[in-house]
Length: 213
Image 1: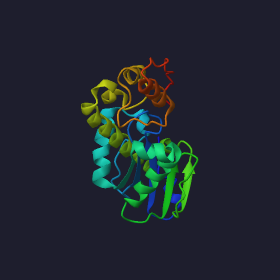
Image 2: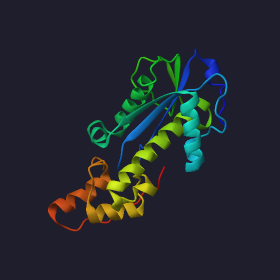
Image 3: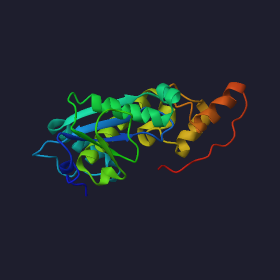
């Protein structure tokens, strides 16, 4: 389970940063930054991927009530312009800036840091080690899932209410039949493969289904 031992190594306030949505074919990439309270920290914080949607939603509300939270969102058109790596770095930067107060140190999930002026440390698997990163992972994941569920109402073909934009078989089949929506990332190969044949009026080739990371 995540702990607060990493926070004790650095000047306060220490914030955790994590992202959600690097791999999907559609929708934004979302990052969150969280500074947890010294006391009365929400219980049950863990890597968002290990939690059910119901538990994430409950913890999301508790984190929002008790912690300082910043969220950064980069939309699909900017993902296509920057590429997903730099779009993710931008989302993380926006999230920290949205805190409204400069952190003493930033703990980032992963092995890369954005080009910013904040003192920071990257922790591989940080969402399973540091509570502040776990909290950020919950905020980012729940925020992005909520966005995709809302967009699913306007674009029902793709099944975003359940797949959240990832390239599952149903989503890929809908891409072949209906083409990309304005929310699809056209720089991603499966989307580009589906779009080009439709523009030329020919049947697209089978799309490759890749497992979700």
